[in-house]
Image 1 (tube, helix red, strand yellow):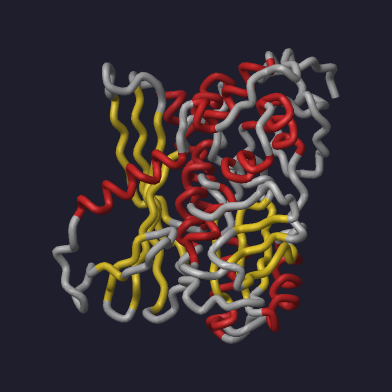
Image 2 (cartoon, rainbow, N blue to C red; image 1 turned 30 degrees about the vertical axis):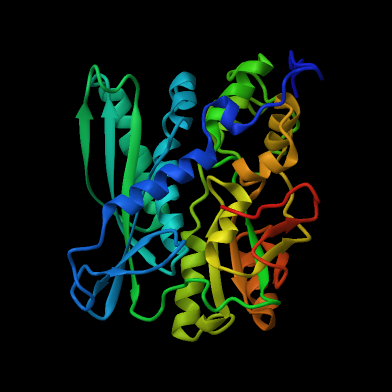
Length: 381
């Protein structure tokens, strides 16, 4: 590991997501206002395209005969700025697809297709080629069809690259995973993240600026070269850019495989034992509160925290609660299952994604997220 001095000292002002430019609470209020203003659907229940209510869900669901279609839309966000700065766009297509298909998985849907939207201030064939190859690789990993997309050149409106997309999935009617059946004693199984994924990069960029570290330099913390980080610079040591730009993990394998196997009767449990799935994105652990109106979630054995999160916390003087509200902290997805099925499901998943294991359980202490770190408490999303 290269030598490193953060340039920060103990008197530096503590940093958080709001001070770096993104206020999660204000964003939540704005989204609520938008949803309230949208009004009701023009499609009546029983018609194709009629909405299927799923409060707090990670994807929109509509009726389609004996099936249900699920839709999710998202973008890469300000991670794109670091990718452009580093000159490596080959991972951002994976980020874009992952953010969408991982949300679809949470409602029990199998992702089927994806469309992208690319906006640039000026046309650049090299940029479009890098994005195209990245999106193709992402769709291979997610097992979806790249069904089309749109590229817009918008000088004067767009000042730098933006990438977003929409994913379509399906599941049989009556097989949504909603969280409604959750009960006290259900077990939380955590699936490890590949790194920061695609949330919190406004704060990441602020911390990077404070640190004085170079994206091209070696990571200023120990990183085990165990295959977690996608290597693209070819140096012996892992660079900071390789860590910060590591692509978001796509959880189609193993989670979709688990859902399908349990639904078809050849999985580690029956489909009814799969109670809820939570994508730990913006809002961090507070996302757990979206799945039930009264039960509590307690994490007593969290997954290991990746070293990049410890570096962000140290250099930015970011407290533990803020870190767990902004980042995934090493756990990208949470699956809640019946206590009787927890061991078999955990073993099945860990064989396909090493590091997956039990992290906590549900309780009747009220709608609250608690943690082995007593400072990490969330009472609202």
